[in-house]
Length: 126
Image (tube, rainbow, N blue to C red):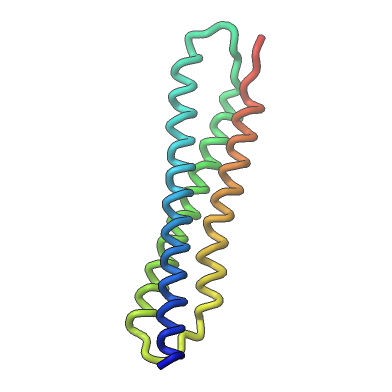
């Protein structure tokens, strides 16, 4: 009984951590793409600010890579939840699922930071 309770509690923890990370990184990376596009639309008429379109494109690609990591986290979370619900035996893959589930949002955050850094270096003032 105690092992089953521990198993269910751990599966619930994985689901909660995964959902928090997914929501955070989805908002961060998708919002960054919207901000970059809005910023470009606003500064395109300005003569004071110059931007390197290649660096801006690289930053958007980095944010999109972050969204791909979010999609990976969604898939792992879904698989983990399905396995937790349907498996009666001990959940032997739990540490691996937890590692992948938390690594994907961390990589998504790293992609976000790289995108921000690239975007900042791609904009300069005359």
